[in-house]
Length: 342
Image 1 (tube, rainbow, N blue to C red):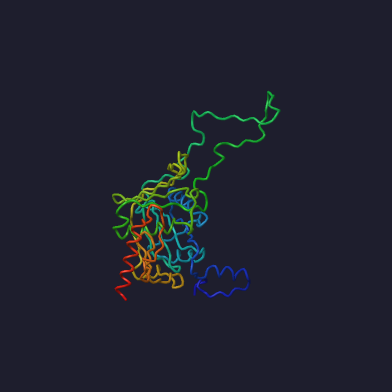
Image 2: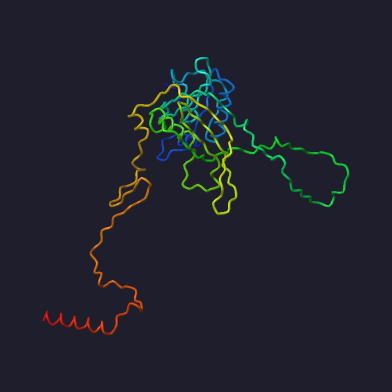
């Protein structure tokens, strides 16, 4: 029996808490991803894994050592790493003559491989290669002097921090990205449909109920066109506008990838349905006479008794008051009706 498959009884409270975290839950934790480097990995593949890890922080584990494994031939090592690091998503990078600059993106179900899709990197621009200008050329600075001791002729440098030493974070840790998918292939072809689902799973981040406007910081854009997948990432800049809603500008921040689809290992329909099954405790109870449309609008049907509209109190206005002649005519009609009944 494998060491990780044994039933371990905790001896300390700390071990008990650790095992409780690994137990199945009704509302599962945020999915972590492991980024693994193969036995032969080029500098391009290594940098891609580092950049994806920067996007996934803190919900990712980066394996820096090389691991000689082939996911499409033997999946035991991936399942072992998944159980060890408690990760349900993985990205494996390798490089060889037959499949240069190769990436395998996949996900687990019950610590077993569910889906795997292999893509090849044709073009790559790293996070660090896209440098945003910190001091635009030709701009006029504002000068501020504070203190009385500025009448000196000679100064000595005691502390110095360079422009390049101050690195503005391009993708703040733990932020939730916006995902955009463009192209008909993502909705028509089965392989692309699964790839879209896999990418949403990989980059979706934490589940939140509300998002503030300032929390929308970067966008991941995927385009399927002519058999290729173009992956671009942009930083969201909120500029001043004449109204309450700010003007939005996109600035490329990296990484930038041109991918081509290679091999696939997709789960069967039955297993895929089983992995998507929702626990009964989380299913909302059905309510009578309540329905929802495709946009999430709630419609309700109310059953009411017949109302006597003659007793309905309406607003009285001077212009709508009846004249004395009309009142006399109504009184005479009522008297005549009573006489007929009698």
